[in-house]
Length: 434
Ligand SMILES: [Zn+2]
Image 1 (cartoon, helix red, strand yellow):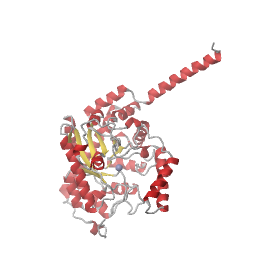
Image 2 (cartoon, helix red, strand yellow):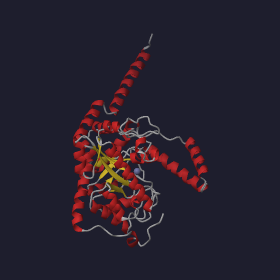
Image 3 (cartoon, protein in one colour):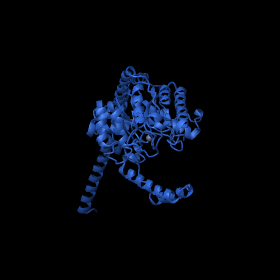
Image 4 (tube, rainbow, N blue to C red):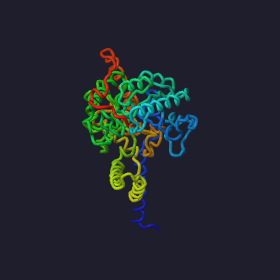
């Protein structure tokens, strides 16, 4: 027989469980909202700023196209692959900037050659699946291809090392199809400061400013992901066209050097650009970001202690990782918090998405691959974003930026010829030979 106290306890327990269930149901977007988000992506293309599948081809199969077939559902492939055609379709992707990334250690002619190989790789992927992909070079291309039911495929270069200090090479890379260049990756170029090292040239050198001007003249988007805040400001001082952050989140939420500080957000609004929010746990979760900072610190100490002894450094890092287990990945809610923050500061007209799929292994569970974009959009709807805002964030903001850059290019091409400046003239030093 139950006592009164026990009954009250059980009643409370039931209520608590019900409240908890209700709360958790409320914490996630429901199937109806996800379905609605999917429908919206028929009307407007979802355009993602950064996907590293070309690098996965390089790393896994040495660019042998036959050895990895994107038309198959590759879920379950090890290590995890985030992208294939069935999942792109499920995610409602309408436009994708494929990253033709090459490591920042590739300098000079080597960097240019390898970038061309990655552009070639991307073009071969597109050619292999003509029923799904079509190359896009303009905002109009994206809209037309999306209306035809295909995925508009653009290319972005991740780091100024890809142009090997040569404006001539930069122009030919544009002709090959590249439509944005991130000014640096994780290392400084000779003319721009990366966020991953201590600033060296206060943002941009005279040649760096000429690179931005020449990109404006061609209509290649200036991408400020990966650069130091001083470089963000220096580029915003020079650029006449709207800029992008192809895959960066908000520093006001997570204090990570890869994110966009609030004072820069204000300038993105003035410039008419777009911040394409990224999903990488280390950039969007404070827990994860702090963990990475401690990891890097430990690695630095080991490198100092065991100079040129990689085995010892690796063993030390293994020990460190055992003693310091990595925290859980970020969540869908973390990503939405970054979007909320940018919206609070400058409005939703300056927000896009840049998942960094296949460029990271630390994604929120709810956003584990390219099939999940509607879940994120549904979460924003649950938080009160209007359908108009959802369409802007999904792709219309990026289309506006591209059109803006195309218009500036048209004007500048009437005003001035291609720049024949050399780094050696503007920066008074020889181009490095590495
Ligand atoms: Zn990146």
